[in-house]
Image 1 (cartoon, helix red, strand yellow):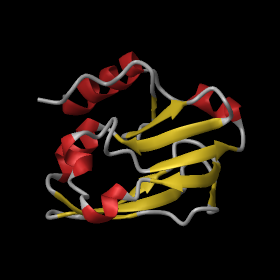
Image 2 (spheres, rainbow, N blue to C red):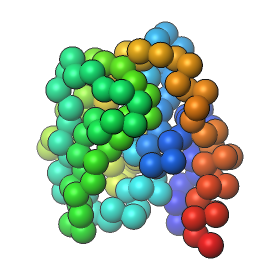
Image 3 (cartoon, one colour):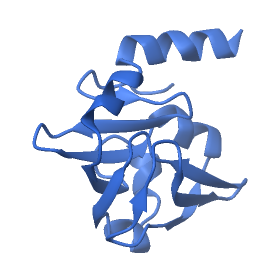
Length: 132
């Protein structure tokens, strides 16, 4: 069963999360639901530091035993840090999608984009509707 979606994050309809650090930066990853659908993650292609992306643009690639999937950035901005641990242990995304398995830290280009994302409750409602 999926873990609870943390309420301190916002969510995209593509199953990514963003945690606003309140200082113009945010951390981005995929949701527990997304890692569950992908099954065993064997490789994460991290973005280059300095890469600029628009909201909804592919920022990373996650490869599982089942498929290869783009990770779409829930917000636009510049990549200022990446989770180097994933290069050696990509399964951290499976084990702890919301903390240890984060993918990138970004400097937001437009904090107003956060308002277009789903709250944890709205995201959970979307998942329920998708399952029916």
